[in-house]
Length: 312
Ligand code: NAP
Image 1 (cartoon, rainbow, N blue to C red):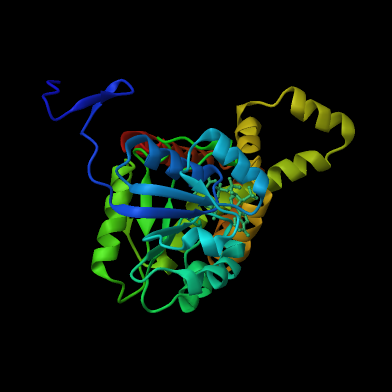
Image 2 (cartoon, rainbow, N blue to C red):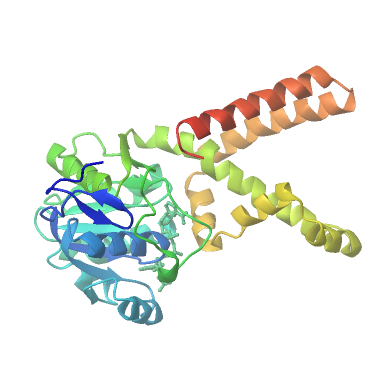
């Protein structure tokens, strides 16, 4: 590619020159895997926000953030962290959002955009929306990107590249606020989709929350086996079980909060899954080879499609 004078090299590829930042001050409430990835991305290119303020539950995390140099300022009090910020991003487990919203609400700047990265959206709108002052804009969001690791050391600036971010603005949300957030995620390299919160929660129930529930369950089942069998599970872990253990290594507080805040959709998908698993069990019991092969072929097709759309 001919880079030309308007492009410059960055980490082995050519990127557009750094643009004017979208926001003056971005306050991150929670600075673990997702928050620190946003902070890193903001600091590396300077085109998201002129200043990054980080808040966490503990001073230890903030000390580490300061050591890593991924925020301009750290602040243990969430109320002080949001003062003067034109963008506030909640990046903590969704179960603490209501308390956080109550703590920051009186300190939010006029016209500030409040967003989040939480994995459930109906609960976030329920818990946060009513607490925010009318002079702010609330645009809930969810980047579909992550790993099984937590904390500020786990983040990386390219986490969101090529992944989707879903925005779920409640009806009547200011269009300009939505457009600015869309731009923020696009600059992070993400594709952006807008949908309503109940739809988001149903989609994520099947694509993310149910698979995690299955992973936690299968690891529990293996752990309940008699000692000698359990030892062999670990010793001979084939790729199937190993893949489940990777998913099951995720943070317990985050996943407790997700399960409890997407209860209806998760239980609905689990019920459908249980019916389908029973049908597969029946096919295995009665030697229905065609049924088994048909199911596996359908699954293979899903994998192939994922690879084709570069989401594998
Ligand atoms: P994480 O690495 O465990 O970090 C959580 C952060 O929240 C930590 O900085 C923690 O501070 C802070 N925190 C916890 N309670 C708090 C409180 N009461 N007040 C202020 N800060 C608090 O979690 P994560 O993986 O970044 O997940 C954050 C959010 O992103 C969650 O809502 C999750 O649903 C969503 N999400 C996660 C993923 C994923 O794959 N991990 C993907 C998409 C979305 P301390 O370190 O001081 O405890």
